[in-house]
Image 1 (cartoon, rainbow, N blue to C red):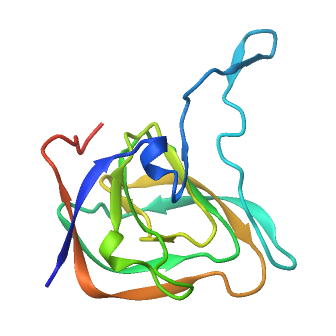
Image 2 (tube, rainbow, N blue to C red):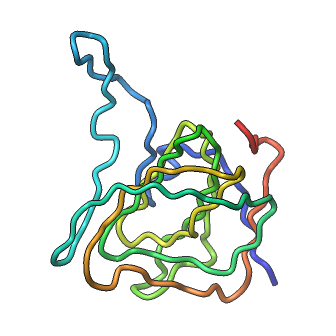
Length: 174
């Protein structure tokens, strides 16, 4: 049997249990003699462990996915948050689940969101998620995450496949 998960639009309220949505929303601060708007502290990276720091990387996804998409695993990073910011204005799919207990995700409560291409996300430390799913290739993402020693990636094989599908009300492209 396959669990089916409907893809829903990404909003700060819907995603709050999993982390932060990174987008130009709310009232900006005016800086640089009024020539720049600053959307301040949209997400605060989290890191734990010895010899840990925050790193900025670029991930280039070389293969596009198509929907519906079947997944069979989730991962989490127990020692740090992980942010993905699209650099090319491309939409991408976010699949997440809250924990069932301290070892595994709640497979019955998987959620899927679609970024509009102007939104990034931060997975809170320890949130179960699927690796990056892009709908266009190549796709470049600025990634902010923990760099350091020690174990920081748990992988969970789902007990049954999970099908991520599009509702007609959700646009797939920007």
